[in-house]
Image 1 (cartoon, helix red, strand yellow):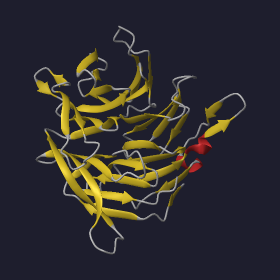
Image 2: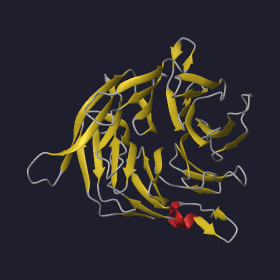
Image 3: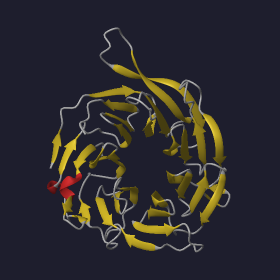
Image 4: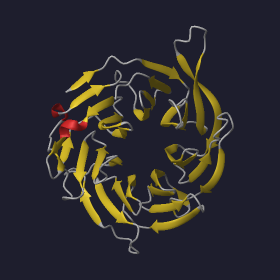
Length: 347
């Protein structure tokens, strides 16, 4: 059952469709600065923003742009490598490592490395659809069905899995440093052991019976053998990789495609999801676990009515593509060219 929470939501028109938004981590206190990546614009960009008060009453803060880094194509993903470096992918098949100053957030982003035409059909470019980072390495997936592993230290491609899939790979996630999982447009999930010299998956399985694209994959923050994935139908699936390759739970969730998922960084029992149907939901995942003296397994659930689900803001008429939360502050970006700021999120 979905309930609405009385949360303070502030929306600001920013004149760009936002595909990715990421808080910039701070060593002390709450985050004040953030990145956005745009799509479907004449000139897409990665921007750095902060929040400022615009009047003396100091009641409402509004985003203010600090710098802009232009890119060709749409921004498809932004992930942190460390506190001052991000990996950003585009629909032109490229990946860049960009650096932000630790001291002056107004300083324009500086490009450290770039890989152009990383994903392609020969001379024709295709999108780098997803990437993930771990311990300085970057794993990317593309419409060409290939997986590339990059080194942020050396600026090299350290592993290529050509023909990883016969169709577009939509999502990729590190399970551990030498193991990744991918999901394709037909809902096929594959686990890859990066230590193996063979370009063959260590395991493969289906999201569900229907051939629906796996649009995002994440792992549980404290129990990485639990994998969650969202699909283009709006469903969520959970696997316990220790047991088998059948979903332990399949939740009928959003009305349409799940665009992003994140466990709250301070509370691994709280899952947040957003969707093309303009919904931003907060899930209490505690009910999905059954604790015993010897193990902890996911309870099989058939729909979201068995889970407490809160709507964090009124549904939009456009897709919510992205969000990022830090303690009690959450940002989300949508196709209505607006940014939304929630500043009293309970966790």
